[in-house]
Image 1 (spheres, rainbow, N blue to C red):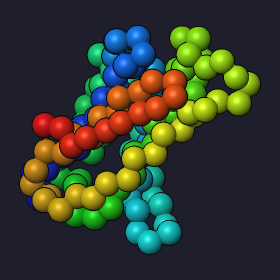
Image 2: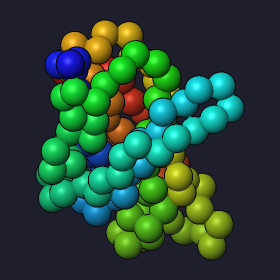
Image 3: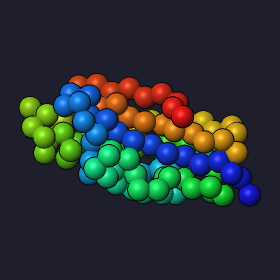
Image 4: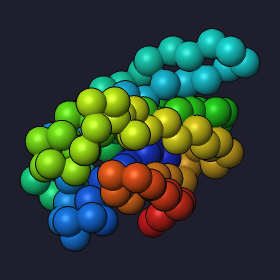
Length: 119
């Protein structure tokens, strides 16, 4: 059994706080096929309550996290337009080491975002 796992969190860089209440979906990607394997919602610390991909479930390959940010940005008056600039934010990444901890956070503002492989 693989010992690796995947965590994530969302920071609202416009307000300087963790972003709570953001729905996240995790997909396994194979070519043009996406298979949803997990869902979670960020808590008051901007994190999921448990790893979005727990130990024993990680396999090498391509994954995609989709952060459903539009409602959060609306709720905090960070979207000015009827058509959101950012609504769903996808982050596609690869996992090569099934025994490692991968951390893929989202740093969010109304008009941009960034990510990195954290620890």
